Length: 273
Image (tube, rainbow, N blue to C red):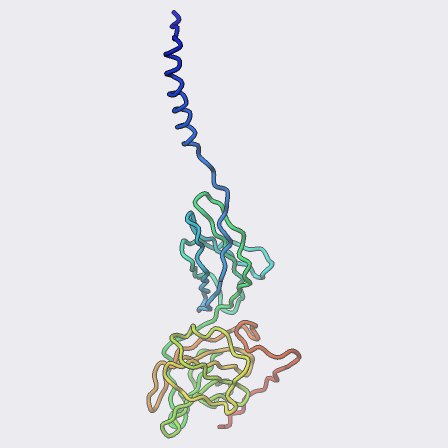
């Protein structure tokens, strides 16, 4: 049996049909294919067998996180080593004395990933130590010197001693030998505040006044970079934290040399300054 719909009834169905079509149009799902912007402002901090990486947070409302990538050179092949929702990541797989190049990408909740960051960012982890105690070399010479290459305390005049402590009538000093340089970098909040060796300003005398809270840069005779931050001084001893770059002539951490210059490496004699 066929039901005949009269003209008036047909007219009443038209608004209902249009409303239904309009409601259906509002529920159309639009797929997001726009990736976040590439991360910027990337920097690193050298740690002991690790590298800390920081960057400026992205501002997209649909940001889901970041991927961290590493390579052995800037233009090399990068491997993803982890993901994070924060604008910081620590690479605990890094090894002391090895240089790593890092890149960061950002991704959103739809899985869209940005292009790799353009910043040239690399770092070389280095060993560090805390609470080293050196005595005044004038009273306890056997325990007054420190050798960064072996992380050990020894005689102030040993062939491999890099720095030693002195109390000269109530004024305290960190001393180095004639083939080693030292510079007081001033007060710092932590050892990490100084990340790059200076290119000038080394103490001509080979001595720097020892002050609690100050960090000192040492350029060793065999072209390594080290730093010391003093945490305590008494009349007979000094206590400090340290970090030492095991990679020789590292462009990030060793002192930059003028083009064409050469540093002559010579052994220290076992004679008191």
